[in-house]
Every structure is written in C-alpha cells, then in structure tokens.
Image 1 (cartoon, helix red, strand yellow):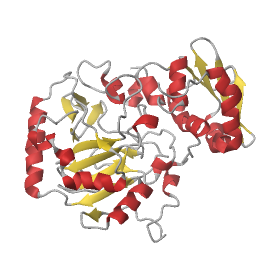
Image 2 (cartoon, rainbow, N blue to C red):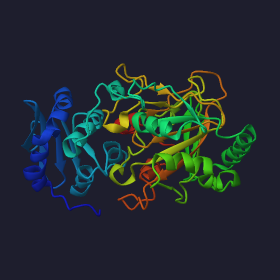
Image 3 (tube, rainbow, N blue to C red):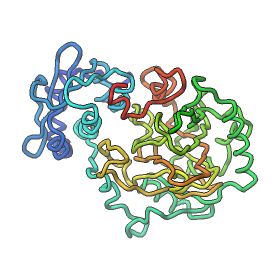
Image 4 (cartoon, helix red, strand yellow):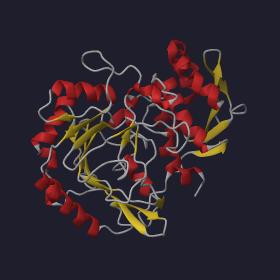
Length: 401
C-alpha cells in the first residue's frame, strides 16, 4: 500500500487505545451508543468489538457482544485503518460480508471508525456540519451565495474552504454551452448498454436510460477543457498543487438526469466522491461541473451539505425523515460549480416535467494520486458485475441483490 504496515492485534493493543484516550473515543461515543456495538471479524477468526463506554469507546476481543458484525480480510481492514477503503466499497465489491445485524448499520458506523482511527469529527445529525461557518468578516456564512469570475478570488476561495463548494455564474457563453450540448448529444447517441464506459438505469416503464458517460474527451468540445484558463484559474486559486485528472476512461464525464428512475444509480443518495475508497490518497479532490441546462429542484439539482468535508456524516438515505435538507446548487447554463470530493452531496430525482439537468464534470486531484487497489478508479467496482451498464443503488446492495 505504501503506508506503514498496520497489524490488527498490535493496532488494537497499542495504537488505537492511545488514540481513543487522546479524544478520538469521545468523538465516536454518541454514534456508538446510538447504533450499538460494532464487531470487525477477520477471515482468520480474529475479531474485536467497539462499544460505547463511559464517555469513550471500549475495545473487546471477539465479536460475541456485537450488534453488527462484518467479516473482512486483514488487508481490507488495513485499508479501513489507513482511510483507503470504505464501507460502501467493501459491500459493493463483496469483500465485506455482514454476519450479524444489517449492512445499513455497518455503513452508518463508518463515521464512527473514521473518528476512532483518524480523529475526524462526526456531524450527527448531519445538518450540524454547517454550524460555525463564517465569511471573511466573521459573519455567519450564507450558503446560497454565488460568485462571478470578476468577484474577489479571496472571497471565492474562503467560501470554498468553509462550505466545501462554490458556484460561479456565467463562466461560459451561450454559444459555448450550445457547443457542449451538441457534444453531449453525440456522446449520448454513441453510448451502449454494457460498453463499460457508461452508467445506465431503468425508468418506471422498464426502459433503459443513460445516466452518465464516463469519458467525453473524444469530443473536441471537451478534450482540452482542463487547459481553459477560466477553469484552471478557479481551481488554482483554491489549491494550486492539484492537477487535472487525465486518466483514460475517466475524463470529462457527462451527467444526464432522468425522471422516474426506479432501478440503477441515477438519483444519488447523500454521498462523498471518495465514498468507494481512497480518501487518504485522492483527497483533496476538486470536482468541477459545467452546467449545460438549468439546475433546479424541478430538473434534479445537485444538493450539498455545507461544511461536511471537515468531518464525517453517518450514512443516511436521502428519503429518510432524518436526512438533511442540504443546499441546492441552483445553476443556469454556463455556470460552473466546484466541490471537494469529500463534501456530502446528493442528486435527488427531478420534481418537474423537464427539461432535466445535464452537466459536464472534470476532476483535479493531488499529483500522482492513484487507487491503492491497482484499479483504474475506485468507482470501477460499481460496474464490476454489470453486463448492461446498470449500477445498482446501495439499497439493492444491502438487500443482497
């Protein structure tokens, strides 16, 4: 992996108790008390249970007392301990097996072990993530604020660092947007179910609908967008050390929102872009969206949970009564949004009759950042068992479908 060689028994005997005593246990206590004890069992039979105790977390050998037990191998546990693997990544790839309790509880517990292992605060309930966000003058941050290219770069940068996202108006002209739209139509016409380069879903009538083309760089309109000084400048003012992700098969993706989707990963739940793994290597990542159409609740606007990149949010379905409302990124054609890969965001279904949101997405990442798994991308696991390009949503994965 390139990281220090962690060993399960030594970590739980020495390193983790020290981290818990230094405050990490207190960070995870409330979540552990709410969810009940979590057991991590290795395939060789070794296991531990994490339980809320006093104001912190107790570590017990074995998994007999755990409410939720997941079995993984030692290398995958090392990935969790290094913040390289994730709960969803383990379940989607079937490297993790729920022995007791529910997969949903295991996913909720993810923010707990990240707090214990890495000291990341937990925002629970999720809306707490926006507490304490301030503008450059120290006043409460207005999460609906937008900017323009001629706005003060320091204001844009500060907003991004606080909220985890920023929306910049009218970066591209009407003619440029029309050119992008034509290119997106050509990509849509060329996409085929099961081609390995696109995501598909099914609507209520059982028809296949295209949700995403993973690499649009073959279209001239998208091929050199990373060199556009407007886009490169917006990223550089936030983090000049990042470089564009030019990996083959993973550049300038195009998203197509569709109404009435009943199967497939189209209406995305609350998630982070490093949710399949790789946070320690791939973040900070900046994802930049160029809007080719209106983005509203009616058209399926992206929603963001301001400030959530500063810690962890327990997994929760977007339709749950405790789910956060978030802030819609209400954009128009030619607008550009940027968000950190680890800020929580969602793509709920459109509420109107169309037209529906369409956007082109580019990514900037740390130099040399590559998946520790040897795969092209952490999200490759989403298509691993798919012959028709349909990505199962997490509820189907939890149900064992």
